Length: 164
Image 1 (tube, rainbow, N blue to C red):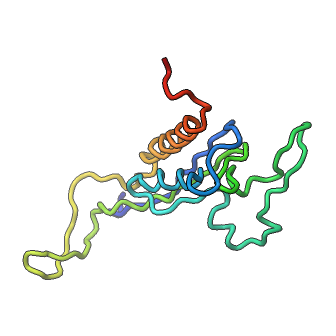
Image 2 (image 1 turned 90 degrees about the vertical axis):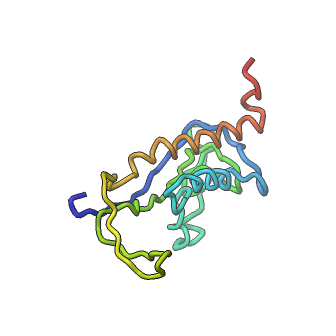
Image 3 (image 1 turned 180 degrees about the horizontal axis):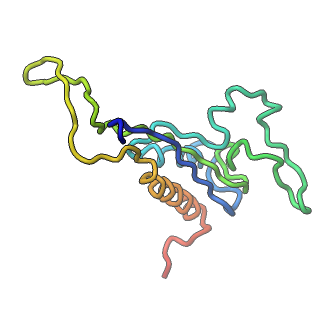
């Protein structure tokens, strides 16, 4: 703030205790719905689920989530997939991260174009501006994830369409 600049950051949301089976394998993929909803939030420039972009550097043997028996139940040894396999929740925690850009409203000199005169000019934005909007984005990202998960549960009959 003292420099008149701004910062971005990452918001991580973890959804716990969801049933396996939310989503569809092709046109109703849970991860696609989540990404679509989160990308609709202003300032979000990227979404990753599970280990996200990091998996592009891994081998299948390093990325796969082995299925194991844990406390007498089928479980996963890891959660690299972020709780979603093939577009469908697998019962593990759903882990989603959103990259939030730095706000462009900064008080440093910036270049732009004056369209009426068709020439390059410098502009300084005055007023009070948040140097980082990431804290404000947290409840918005959480809400979008919750809405998608509730919608999927309604579509699959796990929550009634009416609460009468």
